[in-house]
Length: 219
Image (cartoon, rainbow, N blue to C red; front, side, top):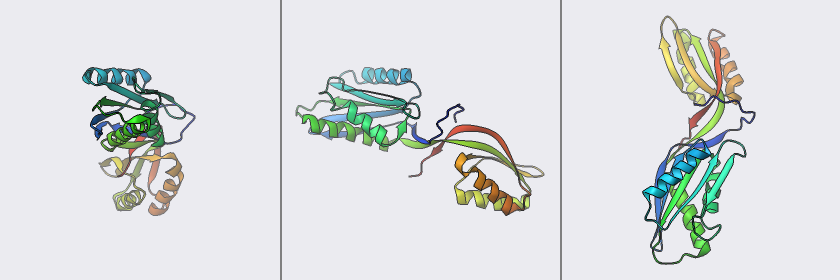
């Protein structure tokens, strides 16, 4: 979860857990390593790490996007013909709407030239394979709520939350039931009304904080 002051509250996708994918094209091996990053320095450090790991490879091309909105985008062909590696890789990340992510595609040359079109397809295809091995989520702006209710209404609230796909962060059972939930901002007022209506106004909703948080995408 992320506490930030940003005027742009548009949701965007992020990699919550990196991964590795691979494809082989005309005996050339393309290994894509994807990692979540939050700064350009972190992304460059990741690139250097991959270059050291795959020091014997012909090329270690990369692309990364940092920050919401326009953000910062960088890419490199690392010796491949201009526009055949880094740019196609970056276009995959941007096409998926991803931010705060870096990918390095390592190429072991197989002895057969692929041509510019073949290279672009191989590098973009490798990134797609890498992303398939990742966990993806959506960064949203929302509110953390504390909901207090009696035991008789707890089931109604759990049903309502299930219908809206809202999971409780925690539930405390004392003389009452208290639930902490995260809800995206555009659902807040409708959810508040539904809670009030379903419990006859008995449930008490308290806004604890507003924040950016990651909601895991469902496959």
